Amino acid sequence: MQWYFWLAYLFGGAFLANSLPHIGNGIAGRPFQTPFAKPPGKGLSSSKINALWGFFNLTLAYTLICHVGRFDLYRWSHSLTVGTGMLVMALISAFGFGRFHGGLKP
Image (tube, rainbow, N blue to C red; front, side):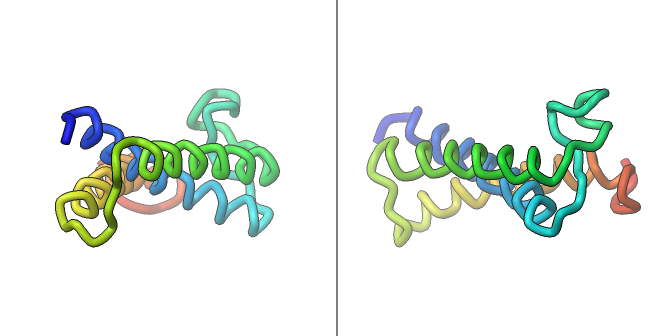
Protein backbone atom coordinates (compact mmCIF):
# COMPACT_ATOMS: atom_id res chain seq x y z
CA MET A 1 0.00 0.00 0.00
CA GLN A 2 1.18 3.51 -0.80
CA TRP A 3 2.41 5.80 1.97
CA TYR A 4 -0.16 8.47 1.18
CA PHE A 5 -2.99 6.03 1.92
CA TRP A 6 -1.78 5.89 5.52
CA LEU A 7 -1.57 9.67 5.63
CA ALA A 8 -5.14 9.92 4.28
CA TYR A 9 -6.37 7.50 6.98
CA LEU A 10 -4.55 9.46 9.69
CA PHE A 11 -6.06 12.78 8.58
CA GLY A 12 -9.42 11.09 8.02
CA GLY A 13 -9.40 10.07 11.67
CA ALA A 14 -8.51 13.62 12.69
CA PHE A 15 -11.38 15.08 10.67
CA LEU A 16 -13.72 12.43 12.08
CA ALA A 17 -12.79 13.37 15.66
CA ASN A 18 -13.13 17.08 14.84
CA SER A 19 -16.62 16.57 13.45
CA LEU A 20 -17.99 15.18 16.72
CA PRO A 21 -17.97 18.26 19.00
CA HIS A 22 -19.24 20.51 16.22
CA ILE A 23 -22.11 18.23 15.26
CA GLY A 24 -22.94 17.60 18.93
CA ASN A 25 -23.03 21.29 19.83
CA GLY A 26 -24.92 22.10 16.64
CA ILE A 27 -27.61 19.51 17.40
CA ALA A 28 -27.84 20.68 21.01
CA GLY A 29 -28.27 24.29 19.87
CA ARG A 30 -25.17 25.51 21.70
CA PRO A 31 -22.56 27.93 20.34
CA PHE A 32 -19.01 26.59 20.05
CA GLN A 33 -15.67 27.69 18.60
CA THR A 34 -15.05 27.38 14.85
CA PRO A 35 -12.51 28.90 12.46
CA PHE A 36 -15.25 31.33 11.36
CA ALA A 37 -15.70 32.97 14.77
CA LYS A 38 -14.09 36.27 15.70
CA PRO A 39 -11.37 35.82 16.84
CA PRO A 40 -10.93 32.49 15.01
CA GLY A 41 -10.90 29.49 17.34
CA LYS A 42 -11.67 31.62 20.39
CA GLY A 43 -14.98 33.30 19.67
CA LEU A 44 -18.22 31.37 19.45
CA SER A 45 -20.12 30.47 16.29
CA SER A 46 -23.82 29.71 16.14
CA SER A 47 -25.17 26.19 16.41
CA LYS A 48 -26.07 26.28 12.70
CA ILE A 49 -22.49 27.10 11.71
CA ASN A 50 -21.27 24.33 14.00
CA ALA A 51 -23.63 21.79 12.46
CA LEU A 52 -22.48 22.76 8.96
CA TRP A 53 -18.80 22.76 9.96
CA GLY A 54 -19.20 19.38 11.66
CA PHE A 55 -20.81 17.78 8.63
CA PHE A 56 -18.14 19.30 6.38
CA ASN A 57 -15.50 17.64 8.57
CA LEU A 58 -17.46 14.38 8.47
CA THR A 59 -17.58 14.55 4.67
CA LEU A 60 -13.80 15.08 4.52
CA ALA A 61 -13.28 12.14 6.89
CA TYR A 62 -15.51 9.89 4.79
CA THR A 63 -13.72 10.89 1.60
CA LEU A 64 -10.24 10.33 3.03
CA ILE A 65 -11.07 7.03 4.73
CA CYS A 66 -13.45 5.41 2.25
CA HIS A 67 -12.27 6.73 -1.10
CA VAL A 68 -8.49 6.75 -0.79
CA GLY A 69 -6.99 3.32 -1.12
CA ARG A 70 -8.92 0.28 0.01
CA PHE A 71 -9.72 0.85 3.67
CA ASP A 72 -10.56 -2.36 5.51
CA LEU A 73 -12.09 -1.93 8.96
CA TYR A 74 -11.01 -5.46 9.90
CA ARG A 75 -7.29 -4.80 9.24
CA TRP A 76 -5.87 -3.65 12.54
CA SER A 77 -3.26 -1.46 10.81
CA HIS A 78 -5.97 0.51 8.98
CA SER A 79 -8.15 0.91 12.07
CA LEU A 80 -5.14 1.78 14.23
CA THR A 81 -4.11 4.53 11.81
CA VAL A 82 -7.60 6.09 11.81
CA GLY A 83 -7.75 5.70 15.60
CA THR A 84 -4.37 7.39 15.99
CA GLY A 85 -5.60 10.36 13.95
CA MET A 86 -8.69 10.54 16.14
CA LEU A 87 -6.65 10.34 19.36
CA VAL A 88 -4.22 13.06 18.28
CA MET A 89 -7.05 15.40 17.27
CA ALA A 90 -8.95 14.61 20.49
CA LEU A 91 -5.91 15.53 22.60
CA ILE A 92 -5.24 18.70 20.60
CA SER A 93 -8.89 19.69 21.04
CA ALA A 94 -8.89 18.82 24.74
CA PHE A 95 -5.92 21.07 25.43
CA GLY A 96 -7.01 23.81 23.02
CA PHE A 97 -10.65 24.08 24.05
CA GLY A 98 -10.23 22.95 27.65
CA ARG A 99 -9.18 26.42 28.73
CA PHE A 100 -12.51 27.79 27.45
CA HIS A 101 -14.74 25.11 28.91
CA GLY A 102 -13.03 24.13 32.17
CA GLY A 103 -11.29 21.01 30.83
CA LEU A 104 -7.61 20.16 30.76
CA LYS A 105 -5.14 22.93 31.43
CA PRO A 106 -2.02 23.20 29.22
